[in-house]
Length: 199
Image (cartoon, rainbow, N blue to C red; front, side, top):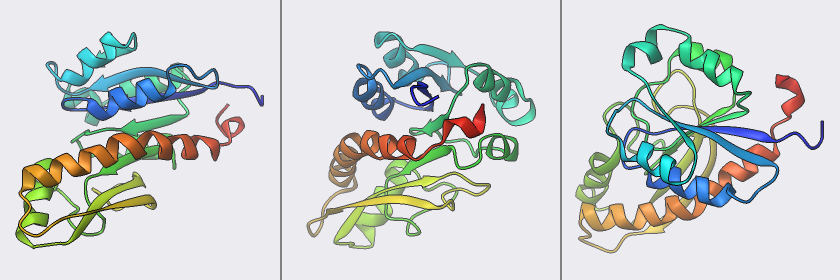
């Protein structure tokens, strides 16, 4: 059992730049496999990035995700150990949280609990940070529970903002931090998962 490959499924709604960084980070690892990238948007760039990296891409609709067990059953068939949200905008339903307790992680582009909750994603977050004149922002990686951005925090990485920085400039700085640190933090989470519990 010690040599079991740990399997990741990535969920993304948008461009998929974080998904791609995660795929590349684990690409040559014998102990970790990215099984698939899932998206709720048919034209999400994340699906194209997965295809380009030789990873299965799967598109689903909101009804399948929120009202059926189709995707959970697919994840279980694939023996997924960790679900990684990378710019995934739907609230994860109770059924997922119960099926994968402490095995769903998310990244948020701010230092939670600041700038969290429904509607606070992407440039909405960076605009709020800019308008409030904050001198520091960053990323938060956390476990997913039944509420937006309220799960247990795993790690936070800070980055400094200079006065009068635009939301676009803040977004660029934060994205660099995400790309660098999210794969590393996922690696640490995997190291702490006892896969035998889920066999």
